[in-house]
Length: 550
Ligand code: GLC
Image 1 (tube, rainbow, N blue to C red):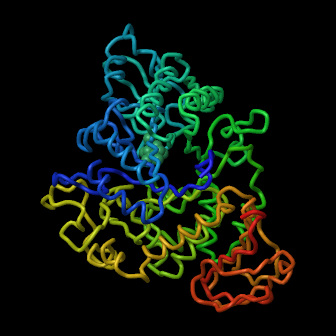
Image 2: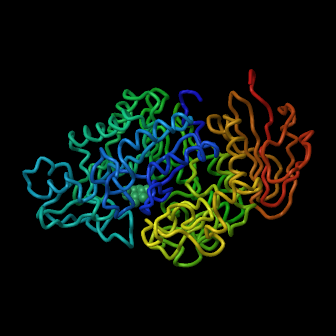
Image 3: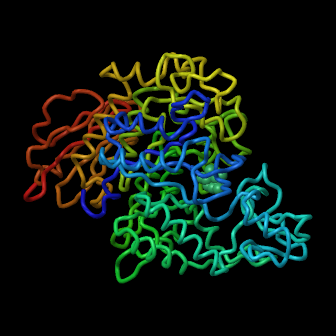
């Protein structure tokens, strides 16, 4: 892999406390994860993103830290973390961690000191107002669960700002000491050997909050400063940001200094995520074609990160009312599947009716579109959700490793588990687990291994350019191509249910011994690129030609 390793990476996101428990206390830990690195290496993952690992009261699954320089003792020690980095590196796997610095936990010593007195050295590390701000009830990220963004603190005798839950007071980015501290946090983890950060809530980090102004200005220069700092400390470190903003805003986050990205390297493609969900729901690729057409040209070094599901709900806020209704009707028809009407709290396998054909189609599509694919633990075996758990916990149940009690996740008594294991129905661990799938060459897991291997043999998918191909194709079929120095790949995905034929003859002149490198079934020799067969919900990845010298 070259310097821009992240363009050709396969990222796997996991939460240490639900992955695997090595000491039998019911909570997943770093030593457990170290023991599963071989599994991840075999899957073909090249980068792991760890959800927050810091000490935390865990009122928001660790996104509420009380110490940015330590590992939560529930998960292990800093020594275990260093060992994880070493062992991962031995297997060619990089590790990135969540950088959650928009806010701290209200239990963080900084906030405890800040609230205790106006003279505290930490007072100005947070955002205060002596009077009740007019925009107190605006800008909530969690409407339904959160009722205000300014809360009164009796100890401080002042109002403090919190974009998220009230126990997550926002840090004050206007304070140079806070800016320095954030850089110091990144230095610390880079020095230990992480390959970068998944930056949480970036649009809010850079918010220069003014009480009473729901549209406070943003300080994008901080992102330039941080990028520079991180890059000086480790040349190949990466920033992968969560910035769920309007598409025309995204380029400001990538930054452009003389044609090269000088802020965030990679942004999660939330817009594409919503459109993928819509396309799958309607069995119509139109919105993906729009997305491919509308994608702005990125500055050098900038990259999208694609995903189908993450650890949060599916956010439908960027779809129109009609579009949203179609996605909800297909994937989240009942209220318990929804999160206060703003999204869907389900995993992909149950959303697609556990239909293997549709699952393969969805992931083949995600992995063949421009950008770096991000997979969340459990997706590779088609795990389900537990809707009896509150909110987003439904999709955060322990990894299902085997037929053993607690899915082989932990040997603790059931009551001690960090979260219950799914043990009933179609998605119960008795039916869905790694051990069963590992011994079955036709399993979803085996398919993922094959698909990822194929992807790694076709670097133009991650680092080349991707475009829609306008060939005579029946409704429901998406045809697109990826071009790079290593060659050209052509992809056909049939979102519809009918078997069809796609006419690829216009590509014949470019084809140099075209072959299927991945497909839903054996279609026989390709030969000439005439009318190509494609099953309902089928897909074909075709290598059209190799680049010179490859
Ligand atoms: C991000 C995380 C989410 C968390 C929130 C507050 O949106 O993805 O899980 O609750 O930030 O930190």
